[in-house]
Amino acid sequence: MKQLGSFALVLFLACNASAQKADTIVTMRGKIIGTVKEITPDLVSYSTPNETVVYKIEKGAIAKICFGSGRVETFSDLKSLANLDGAFDWKKVDVAMTEHETSGLYKIDLVSTKATGTTVYSSVTKVQDRATNKLKMATALLGGNLVYIKNEAIEGNIRSRNGGRTARTQIFGTAYCSQLLDDMEFKRVMDGGNEYTMASQIGLRNNDADINNISTFNEPVKIDSYRVEKGFIYLTLTIGRRKMNIDYRVINFKDNKIIVAYKEGTGYYNLLLMKR
Image (cartoon, rainbow, N blue to C red):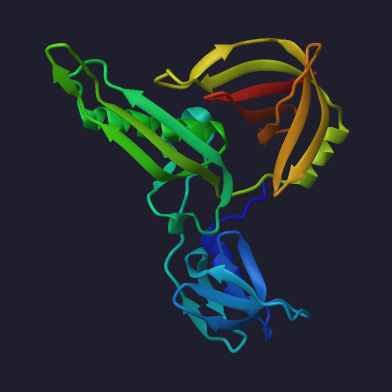
């Protein structure tokens, strides 16, 4: 991954670099060297060296500005997000209730989950908690460490002599991550060969209450091509003899393995590919 290192260290280095007249804007994604033009209640306008174009960035994505004069202006602390070891680490996924909290993060994809009570006496709060947990699981499967809840529909239990309906909750959100993978390092891995074996599949399907180990395939996989789009790495795969019509997004990799994420229908999945 493109590691930012300790965020505190980034702040220190950004503000204690060799003397220069340019301003340094420190964000979650790193630092921007340029000239600050204007600071408003919501935005900071700046231009980069040797350019006249003026860019704008939300103040919520900025930790501090180190001006060329030596003055430092500190803004609110950025949200500190956990690094997940895998999808089963989903409890570490953070939940945002306002879009402002996603400033400086990388948008992955839309996510939605639902949960239903088992009886008409089920706790509405517990049903809501299950739907939220499933949303965090879906986000983790997609390689995210924060989910922004955009909409939540909650219905309580209905009891009647002619039957009833159990409580239900459906939540819609957007998954985000705080870091991108190193595409140049991935190119180096690809230069070493594109023949893999599908070792396992995990996923969260519509009616699942938890992430499940779905199957172990032990099938040959060929990486036909890959592309980088908005910082994310996508693969096209041939599994066995089937050329798959799915965009598989790389969420983790090492020299001998790749983990990809994908959505299919209402399910969220990971595939573990091991190098042959």
